[in-house]
Image 1 (cartoon, rainbow, N blue to C red):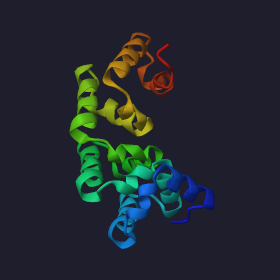
Image 2 (image 1 turned 45 degrees about the vertical axis):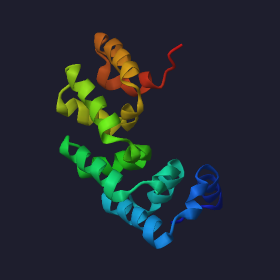
Image 3 (image 1 turned 90 degrees about the horizontal axis):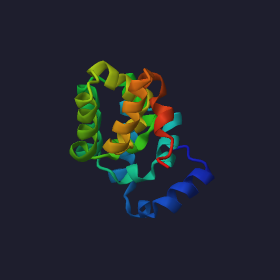
Length: 160
């Protein structure tokens, strides 16, 4: 995989269950699938280091359906690879419990498919925030005419 000693230490310390996985049956298929999605060999180590729990996900039951859904809503192949490499936890999120409701809430706020796709491609962490927090931030930015350019920065702020 090309992980450095420090990266291996980080993965093992945060996801020790990795020792239970069989290389050929579980880990290798995940790594090969990440390459199929367009994540380069040099980025696979970074993806695994950023999100060790991905190693416990099912490619067939979790990751492939997520990538298919991203494609279905208009995210292109290159953007899917970028989103997956930038924010790998997204591949493990629940479609029904998180991803679809979050995108639907943006539609309900009046955002079009192109705007939603552009936001996801530039700031995939958008899908990790609670709908309430996201709705408040988007309303403030929209009122100021700065929604597209400032959402990522605004979402990183605390709710103090």
